[in-house]
Length: 164
Image (cartoon, rainbow, N blue to C red; front, side):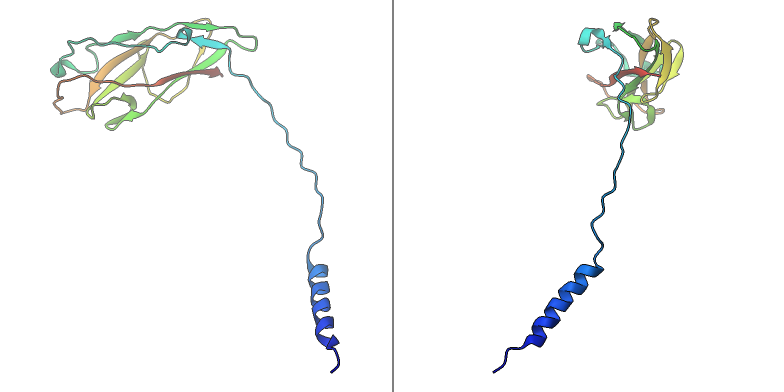
């Protein structure tokens, strides 16, 4: 019996066709560039948690977005070489009834924030110039038309500072 060279030629021919039809490897340089910016060298509140305590005598019937307003007391120290033009944001979760105010563990209660006398929506940057320090306030607010239940409430957020 004779060897079948036709099959071998067919197989070799198929491989040759696949290799010649496949694209050749190509080298293409990729240039990537960017600028790394160091965040402002600021220390907020000596790296301690900022506490706002509304006390133990907040009456649910008197929560109206004005009563119980508290200053947010914090310290700010920056060693800035680049620019004194900074921006600040209070980052947190919005209340279900108003995403601009901070959510608390009580569904119908939130914490409205102010920069001086102006309302300050959470998660929104605002500009200021160091060494001035923005004066911030917090005040409890409730969903309109609701009656709150008594008990402790908590909320949390993060104070961020960056260059403008």
